[in-house]
Length: 315
Image (cartoon, rainbow, N blue to C red; front, side, top):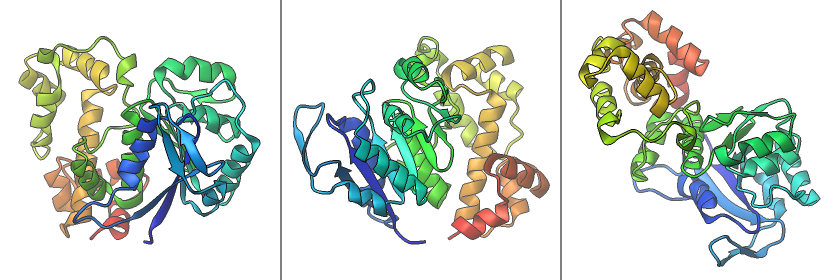
């Protein structure tokens, strides 16, 4: 698999954080990890691009850089009520037309929507701007609750750290769960948050520390091979199954069973990538009981088989 070129489109005034999300995941060389990505920044007009932080960035590449990108990142668009420059929209449509993946972080969804590539398709953005995105682009199916939405050729994310979540998700899709987990570990980030999780700012008021699911999730993740049930998780947390389900819905946006299944599938991915263990053994190690059950759950979650996944991502 060759090096994948990622080009971020800087748009004045550029948000430094959204751009840094893409740069940190795709553009940083990390000791001990192979370099799978080549990262570049371009602008409509090369030169000084002002930022929201009060300084200018020197961008040397123009829109022609998008013609050679495998992935184009739109790291925010600070003028959502204004029409985007026609040359920018044309360059994005041209990149998409030849097969590039377009990725919008936070308010970048407004620019991506202007291309028409989100019409009749699911997209998300920062919860604070979701209603405005829906009003301005009624053909877009706006999902205000999710962290990110990946449709294959286009992807959108909510605000702040959700941009990192989306970028790590794309690394996982490109190079497997184990490699993405290593990148996340270097960044001191959680290795995987599902796109379907709630945007935390849109969720109910923050849980008290005693109500946090963190310790329970860590405990369960170390015991995937055991017969964990919702009742056992609830007993460990010292609450009823109903209360536990309510906490999972409020803090993670999924049920305890859905979270547990996603962890088991992710653990199976890592074992398929990093070991030569038989599928039956992997199924037992991650708590999916049998190779048949692993294949069924794996296909439902990833639309592929364990054997095909190992062939693609195995070491």
